[in-house]
Image (cartoon, rainbow, N blue to C red; front, top):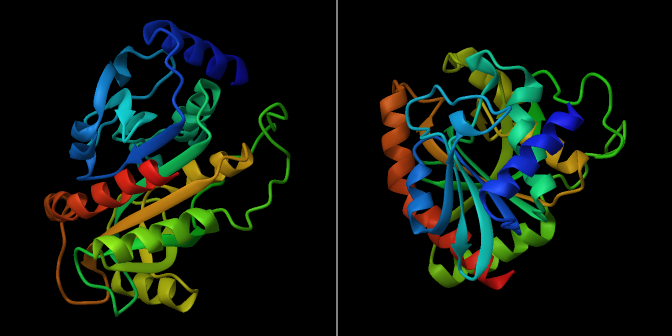
Length: 268
């Protein structure tokens, strides 16, 4: 796997003339339009990248965007991969491994999620302060010691300094932020009411089907992470959600997330 990661990174470097991104950004469901704000220099379709899976989910365009945003060199994933698509956890997290080889020193992750905390409302932005993993761990199997330790510590897996920076920016920009624990499950079914009650009982504030594997491998490689969930429905209410509504709510909240991410890049 390590050799494949290195070969893919080398191929991308050749295609982008050694473009060296400082920050990686993973854009979740309904949030792909954020990429339009990037001053794009190179755009690579996933299907053209050696070793990459192909995103099969509506709302995930399936491109890596290389360019500049607020003076920073960034690489953005316009769509991600999920365990429920039938990929292994190693395939799901492969792009984060590749981004590390390309040179990123920080990772921003985003997702659409169902609210568990009863104080949350549809359209809120939740800064992820911690997570609960209910998926297979992507580090199961032989450890790639060149990338990180066998038993990586998950304390402070969402960087406290970046969270503090986001809080200060949100106050300046008059953006309301929520804070909480993200519960990562396999999907693809939306959660039952009983599952939401269980997630609440174990300390969750929002639930989704992604992000956690990416964060685990990023921290395995000692990359600082900042994460945001867009609350697209309130799971403990009687409202019935569907994927189209998740995309719609994600796009509506995307403007706030874009402001937050841009200011964080500018002020880093």
